[in-house]
Amino acid sequence: IAALRLVLGDQLSFDLSALDGLDPVRDRVLLAEVADEASHVPHHPQKIAFIFSAMRHFAEALRQRGVAVDYVTIDDSANTGSLAGELRRFVDRHRPPLVHVTETGDWRVEQSLKNSGVAITWHEDRRFLCSRTAFARWAHGKRQLRMEFFYREMRRQTGLLLQPDGTPEGGVWNFDADNRKPLPRGLHGPIALRFVADDITRDVLASVRGRFAHHYGSLEHFDYPVTHAEAEQLWLHFLDFGLAAFGDYQDAMASGEPFLFHARIGAVLNVGLLDLRRLCHDVEAAYRQGRIALNAAEGFIRQLIGWREYVRGIYWLQMPDYARRNAFGNTRRLPEFYWNGQTRMNCMRQVIGQTLEHAYAHHIQRLMVTGNFALLAGIAPPALCDWYLAVYMDAFDWVELPNVLGMVLHADGGYLGSKPYCASGQYIKRMSDYCQGCSYKVAESTSDVACPFNALYWHFLMRHCELLQRNPRMTMAYRNLARMAESKQQALWLRGEILLARLDAGDAL
Ligand code: SF4
Image (cartoon, rainbow, N blue to C red; front, top):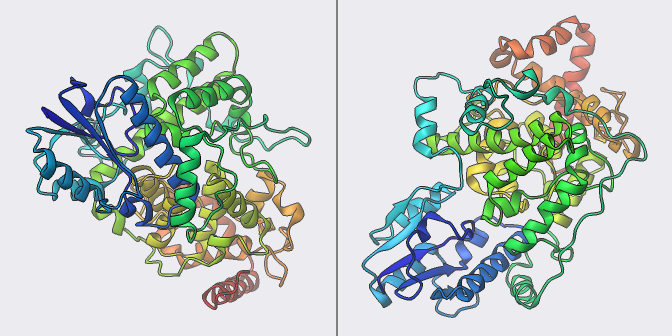
């Protein structure tokens, strides 16, 4: 063997840097399904099945291209259960003079490979636009980082949605304010594209069912793309049927509509079945051909070259200390209903329910329902981060940790985002139909049937007054609090205390 090329489960791209200069005959590619990665948090069974099946299909596609592949399945009796163990086992057997690996998406995994005792030639992950070093250069000397300025830089670098003179298309960089419409009555998302399991996927499903049945989440509805060709179909379906309405309704939520106009491509993009640059160019082309409005194109491209690259940059700049940040000093346990959806709060029941069923919820459901509740209730950051990492198909540490710890919980004290995304039930009422089917009353805040989000919102503002009231983006909220009669403030505080005590006692609310 001339060289070993290790490919991880989220690196399934033919042009991965670890495969540069691959000699299909003299080199060997290694892929390994390992128990450690499937269970260091209790990943949703659909997520495990998706990654294993995509890995097996990728290995098959490499073999069809004449590449020598070693593939270790989870059921292999010799499997050591860890990536470092499998790497060492291969090296002990074949003694390759060179071992190529592309930098990982997870700090913990990269450390384990670096500590494996195997000499590795590391390669940059070119699938991202902004390298770790380029991001560090951009961030250098800045006391606070802001996604908006990073995003403008990326627009300039890529030329996406720019006019010939270098100014942004439409005269402004960001159309976020045009992306927040609630769903009009009677409007439904397109019919979701479903992918039928082939023999490889059926084998994986049987194996996952046998080994990971104790993890939360259903395997019944598995219908994800697992090959590059299927991922392409999913993408084209979104371009044809989702993208035009995505701009207006990307923040909307509706009962029984788990996907609405969202692309659902996060998982396939994150494991390497789609290419980021190509997606951006397709979206820009759709805009230039007059098929979609500018707010739809800009909103989508911002998610990809703005938020996605920004959170990855922060992750690698700040790890491992970032994972320990806890600006509010929160210690509350994650309520059990996050794992089973059994609560009377309809918004939480809907979002957690679809998460268990599909391993999917869109960004506003994650940020403003399950995330908002955890922020208001003071859930300990590691517990919530582990939950998000476990239950979402597209969640990998580099993207999940900054989004949850920084954006959802504001636990980094405002390093990633300028304010906490806290909201009362009024926001959920405006952006969804959830409140109509709820046992709680969204218009009430202190009665026994009052929406829990309301009192918890004010309780959150009151208990973190010292940390937050000088934040210019919180001025309005604190002004509203100051205008409130003291008796009302006391009633809200009391109701908040009761709700938190009930959570501590294991009550599902
Ligand atoms: Fe959620 Fe409150 Fe609305 Fe119920 S009333 S769905 S708890 S926001």
